[in-house]
Amino acid sequence: MNAKKEPIEDINDDIKITDHEQEFETSADETPVDEETPASSPTEDNQLEQDFLKLKDDYIRLYAEMENMKKRAHTETEKTIKFAISSFAKELLGVADNLERAIAAMAENKDSCQELLQGVELTQNELTKVFAKFGIKRFNHMGEKFDPNFERVVQEVPNPDVESGTILSELQAGYTIHDRILREAMVIVAK
Image (cartoon, rainbow, N blue to C red; front, side, top):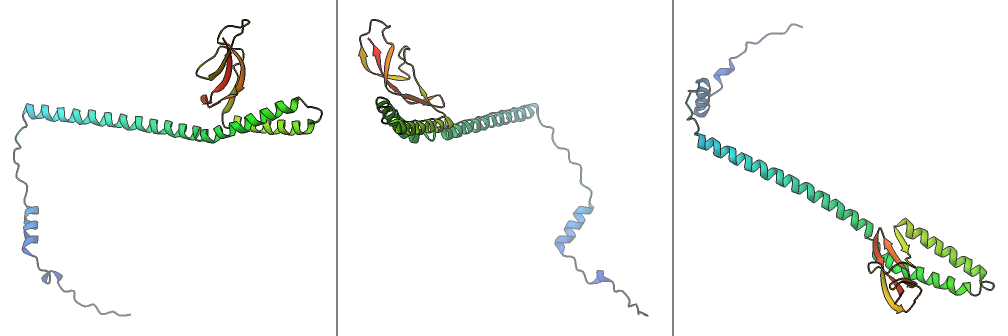
């Protein structure tokens, strides 16, 4: 393989430099002239420092505010998730009440309704387990002093044996959901 070498042409002859490029080349070749920048005055330095400190303070405040917003949003989300079933749970409380009434009615006729009574009690136990799973608890303050946060007085009955305001009986059970009142108990108290 005997290759013949051709002479290389000078490519620089074909390239034309525009005026703009020449200006760029000449300005790049020139050394920059040392121009003295006027020294900033103490008042300007002081003003810049004050501006910087103000911006830094604003940044810190905004950052803290954003962190607080994140925490509040997280707390609100947790509450929403926790108490989202409240209205549904209130509707189920009527079912729990009816099961209690059925058990109380069948307790009087145990012999004739024994199997039915067992079935209703099993249903009530299952409902109680579901309530516990979702943080719903029944409270009973029988024999204790009336608390307007938990109970609603339906009737006052004179009773010299106990102190006035003591809960004598419960007409409707009270429930909480995650330590928040779901439904007040309806009670009869001593006068």
